[in-house]
Image (cartoon, rainbow, N blue to C red; front, side, top):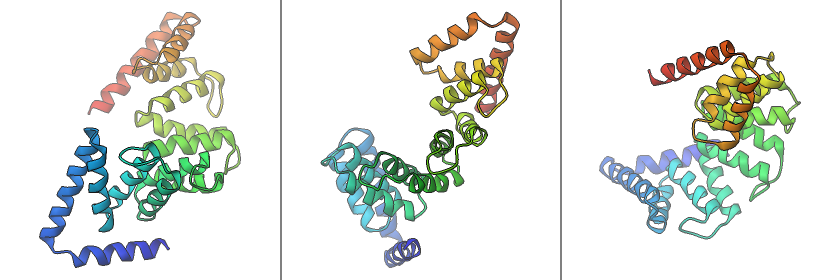
Length: 234
């Protein structure tokens, strides 16, 4: 089925003259601008047009808009349909989004096996949120055998990509020694990074951790935070 989707997309695209492809791409970018600007009805029409010509990104956005009721009614079944079409084309954000619908049982069968399969496909392409979701599956033992070490491995990948909730989760893993060796310096480091958006709960946790740590450990953790940020900026 996936191969058939690729074939249909290929046939559609080769039928369109190069100038028309450029115009379609421009329409897709305009639809994205409309979406980001909150002009959802106009964006929806633009994505529908681009989706007819096989644009996976447009199909993903249609799924997103149906899921959130943006420019159209909330319809999880329709959202799952568009996500699936984009996911079969290998579009990692759609694969991750479809996995989430499977977890929630919204418009898709509530099967953890299906969820972890889509998360893994997206993770194999380096999609950061899928790293975290796959790690969560291993932590909970949903769709896979529970494995804290494997969970920490995937959460670490997401944390390294800057996913804040993954950084907080990794901090807790280091604090309690789940899947990693217990290390309060590393726990402080990741909680510090995870609280960078002003998350009050994370900040409170950081303060509690600091109250029980020697000054030299806090200093070391903050040095690691600075090193991590400097590496990200390169």
